[in-house]
Image (cartoon, rainbow, N blue to C red; front, top):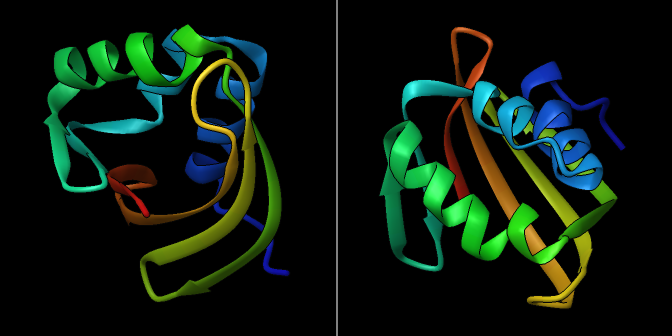
Length: 105
């Protein structure tokens, strides 16, 4: 398994610790969350998504595998909490040491 880039690790650590500010700070100003085709762009939209579907439902991520190719990191993980529970794949596109896009599949 590849060591996670700091911004990707920050997304997971912030989620697991319920730290919304740290979660949002991991993203670029124009960052995106693509959650199975539903796209949330910019801090305000990502914050709303986070409140409804991530930290707001006490999500917890356990990384199972990760690989980085260029500026893209793909992570397989187990999700638990009071929302979705099960396996997931997150793909992160990084720019300037921040997450420019987090795509969930």
